[in-house]
Image 1 (cartoon, rainbow, N blue to C red):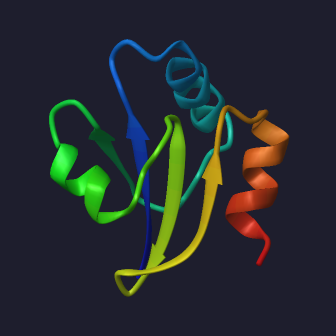
Image 2 (spheres, rainbow, N blue to C red; image 1 turned 30 degrees about the vertical axis):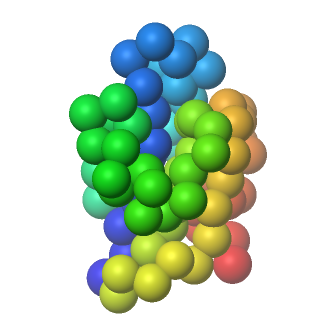
Image 3 (cartoon, one colour; image 1 turned 180 degrees about the horizontal axis):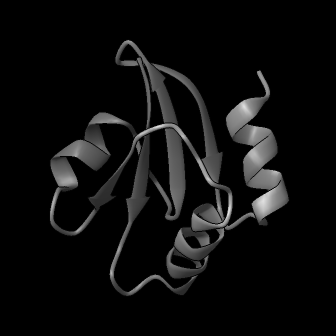
Length: 82
């Protein structure tokens, strides 16, 4: 099963914009929010160096990653295209 980890932080303005843009994509893949300040161990496990970052997992194996804020169109392309 696929899922997306959305790495974010409460102080990050681009993260808030990405969250809104992701909401516009009507994403059918379950998305989990990981605040890097609350869960630094998870961020370290995935080698997160900047936020916002999206990590798509399939069977808990990373398939791809996207760094930075993107438009709803760019997000749809990233989510649904291999």
